[in-house]
Length: 385
Image (cartoon, rainbow, N blue to C red):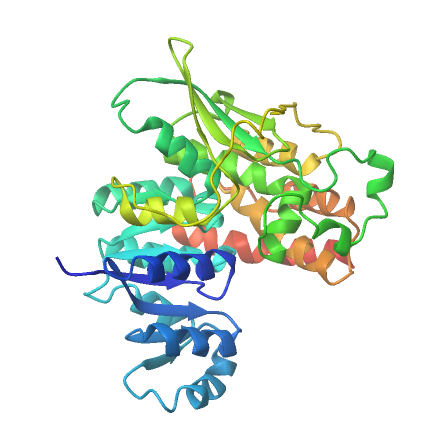
């Protein structure tokens, strides 16, 4: 049986690097066809030398010449640059699966192109479904393209549903670590720094996602994702703060039964499951020891302290382009916080103002999403000044 060809969008990030570990561990089953990055050309070139893909793409066109120079000893690896190259490379005939591990709105367009090319999507880019969930689900159905979740929470829900066929879901129990500020009084949040926020208690992730976890916007986005992935209403999704990050999420059925997926915090497991579904392959690493995991706690999230989560629920309630507005504003304030241009509590304030000021579109088209994203970013940037 020939090896499955995988394109990794965002190979230099946390998900991308761990996906390469999975591919290396199962090199008899998987092969890298394409690797992409935004700016980290040194790591991208290093990955290309090791995995020898057919092509690599750097999204930032200004880094093309430098990347080309790093790859001059590997003439068989094609080197491309720019957003258009990202869209085109995922359509390549040999590709079986596309792992969308890019961060932010930039992941939407190549995901759409991959779906239209009938590729299996291993979805790690939250913003794709947050921004345009209805459009993505319709395109996936029209093009018979499978979408397999890679987020640990959505993979846990997916795994809990395997074998349940059409049994209706009563409730999805979406777990959250609570981030580094779970027990901190709201008064102290006004003075926390990016260094404080980047110290996640259980997961090792990229900076953008780690800040989103600290504000719990990340969990809000996951609620929106779950709505589209599993065909439920927001009212059927309950967020549980679970500091131990052992129960990765669960499903409650109509008879009251609850099925959950448990494990140590290791993103390689959901990545590998998306690659191998419906098979389970061996995976090296630590195993869950339930004798040591006897303190499993669950709390309700504090929506006053973590207003970003409340704003995400409001965006779901309004629908239309409102989740797109929230995502765009969040990307602006997240970057501003990382650059010391915005306070921690100020992020939610600016997102809320952007929701109020950006024109609402009830039934947006793809072009509406593009316009909304640009307009919301402009409004959020103005609010920062």
